[in-house]
Amino acid sequence: MKSSDGNRIRLQPMWRKVAYGGRQSGYDDNYTDESFLEEMVMNANVVKRDLLKVMIDSVSISQYLCIVSLVVSTWILTLNLNIDESTLLKLDVGLLLVGFSVLLLTTCPFSLKLLTKYVLNISFFISGLYILAPIYHTLTRSISSDSIWALAVSLLLVHLFLHDYSGSTIRPPGALNNPKLTSNISLNASIVASVLVASRLPSRLHVFAIMLFSLQVFLFAPLITFCVKKYHFRLHLLFSFALMAVALSVTYQLHRMFFTVLLALLVFVSIVCPYWLIRIQEYKFEINGPWDEAKLCFDITE
Image (cartoon, rainbow, N blue to C red; front, side, top):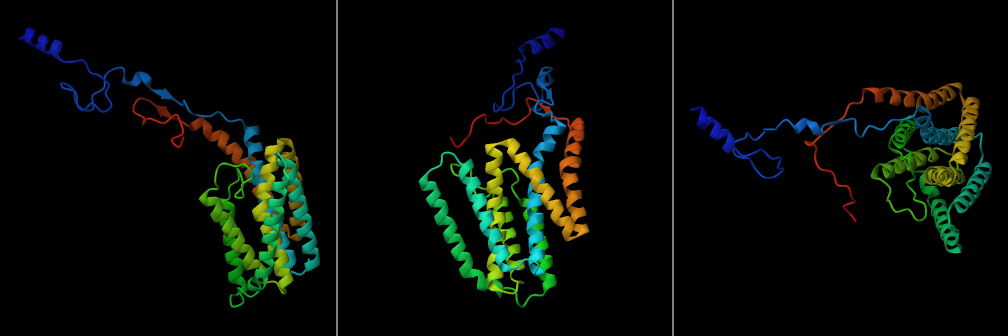
């Protein structure tokens, strides 16, 4: 009896780890031997983050929050008729020249073809906006101001939530990747909010000036800041801190509550969130082993 059991054990085939070989005779389908857990690895892909580096990386988010706050401040001052059409147009021309110069200086290599392309695109953009200004002026005449403001605030929140803070919806020359769907939705939300606000202004020239200002900021400011960051990171930090100071100064003169909200957002994004991220890293626990799905180590599109 004992010899027959011994023969049965000796005749049983050795278990092998086979991915798609079907069930092995003599073993259950979920059988594993003692070597199964030997390949288990814990926290192999966990990235150790530095608090200062995370805070520096969050500067891009704080920078764009300040840009949007300056746009909203300009909207409020224009609606209150504190800024007239001529001042807005001078501001538009100044922003256009500064942004155009920064883009040409940070884009390498510079060429006459690229310059001509930029000039033509901007000319078509401004001409189309001027033609559509009368339509924007009367677009929301039958809608109450409360509804307009509620919708504009909601669209700005959608814009901030879906915005691509790591890049720009308008791609720089030579960029290979296309913009994400969420960044396009974010851009469209900001444009609709600009149209809603512009429709409450008293004159068509006012509408054209504020629309040109808003679209310059929402369309091209992310591109300019992305090119500056790619060109020189310290210059990016210097520009961001200067922009924060200007935004806080403008909002403080505009309204104390607006200033408090912006300051709280900047502290939360730049200090509190990085600290939380570093703290929760201590509780991250990841297990990898032979049970994981296979991952491709190359680009499938190549």
